Image (cartoon, rainbow, N blue to C red; front, top):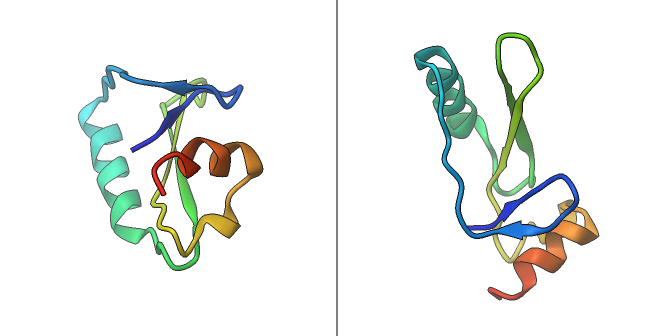
Length: 77
């Protein structure tokens, strides 16, 4: 698991507070992600002022991600 802020810095811990509707959207987004494509999903609040971006990474799909993301993940592989 890697948690990155907008600047690409890694964080060790976050508290994620979701409404029931946002949680349902997150679950649906996770179910539709295809790790072989390195795709990602955005979950926004009702006003589109806050956003969560989620992706699934593997050693085989790192090529799809930005250099900042690959750098943060490389320490694991």
